[in-house]
Amino acid sequence: MKSINVKAEKNYQVKVGVDFATEIAEILKHHNKVFLIAPSSLLKKFKIKESRNLSIFSTPEGENQKTLTTLDRVWTKCAAIGIKRGDAIIGFGGGATTDLAGFAAATWLRGISWYAFPTSLAGMVDAAVGGKTGINAKSGKNLIGSFYSPSEVLIDTNFLGKLSARDLSAGMAEVIKCGFISDYKILNLVQDEFLDYEELIYRSIQVKAYVVSKDFKESNLREILNYGHTLGHAIEKDSSYKLRHGEAVSIGMVFAAELSRDLANLSDDAVLMHREILQNFNLPITYPKKRWPRLLQAVSKDKKVKQTKLRFIGISKIGKPVWFEDVSPTHLSKVYERISS
Ligand SMILES: NC(=O)c1ccc[n+]([C@@H]2O[C@H](COP(=O)([O-])OP(=O)(O)OC[C@H]3O[C@@H](n4cnc5c(N)ncnc54)[C@H](O)[C@@H]3O)[C@@H](O)[C@H]2O)c1
Image (cartoon, rainbow, N blue to C red; front, side):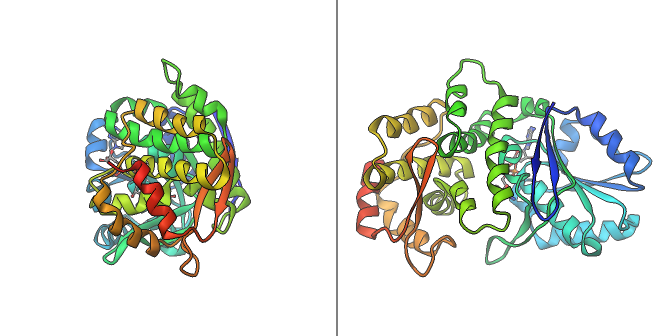
């Protein structure tokens, strides 16, 4: 087991390589009542049952759980079982579940302890680390939420064994992103024949933990985690969320690399490396040409756009992020030509 310390509004540990049963037993010892929130499919798959002081709330799948209706049902059950200040919530599942569980913990009785057990790769390397919790509003994704750190993030990599190949690849996009913005070793490891998930997860979390510890409430440094995300978010939305977040970010990273070649002299080899590594994981690296006008419109509305200037995160070489301020739409269109099909 390896652990990483995250400094936020309170410090907490991310433990990689734990055993789920052992950790649950430990949490149950520390709280009078524990309330575990998880999608029904995972409760079945991993045979998780209620016990004397462990109550369970079963959620719908994916984004369907990040709603006010589900949150209200969670609060109602908190009241019914009598969850008090010293009790705890557990989020067990992908990023959607840890987002919901964290926000339920942030809001119930003005904040109680919570533990994140991410079970998807995207949840392990991204969603569960960084303190952002929340649900979707009718008017948009992730619009309601708070920064509310867990007591611990506990990662049992055995859960990955049941994850679909597509979800595993989508999670790899965030791992690969950490390689490009900060840690060359990750890029070597992802090219190995047998993937050492524990090491890849550990190294990716180190990248995110370092950044969020320096910049908890997202101003400047934290933006480097958005490498590939400005166009990625626009593509994800344009696909009506048919593309996974990681798949859209994969295309966005190739775009960011091409932009970096023009504006920061990123080498041709490094740009090629983006395409090769992402493709090895069956991740998409192109998007239809005709979608550009809609994507440009969406990028202009992205919350990372400051005072209507189009800003992007790029890299000047592997591990060296750079900020591109005020990129012209004409230039962006030219770069999109190179990544579209
Ligand atoms: N809080 C943050 O900082 C942050 C960062 C990135 C993403 N997110 C959020 O995370 C969500 C995406 O996360 P995700 O990709 O994990 O999606 P998800 O939570 O919807 O999970 C994807 C699917 O995989 C299933 N699953 C999870 N673990 C499994 C396992 N071990 N075996 C089999 N099936 C499993 C889930 O039940 C679900 O059906 C989005 O809602 C996004 O907004 C949050």
